[in-house]
Image (cartoon, rainbow, N blue to C red; front, side, top):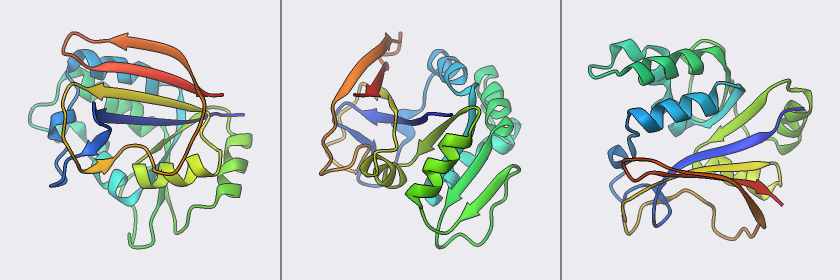
Length: 185
């Protein structure tokens, strides 16, 4: 059985995008990227909403990025090795390998996917993650906190949800990022 892990990068005040939709401030440096690669390596399936998928599909061909670092290229290998499920009512088709499109988030289907998975799954994007969190499907939260205050934007965690969590790991990085890993209690 796989576990469902919500992975997000957020400002200190809890936003993953600022009010204008910018998230350039959250780009991990080489040290953080290498750490993320190790976290993501055992993942078998990524669950994405449309917007997160559109951001992440660059990893299908990271060598095309003008400033691709070794850690970024390695992440491309990790990303391409996993299956992807994209939840969207508006996306016509998917353009990456090992990817399927679902029109609606079905908590029961995700529960079955977890039960049959041999490897862990991650969920990306705050709106999609909110559905999974509210359904009690998220087993673990992996949060990368960026040393910036945004004052508004898209929140990384849903409003109206209360959950007891247990801190199981933490790490501080040279550039000021902090990694926090929580298990659902």
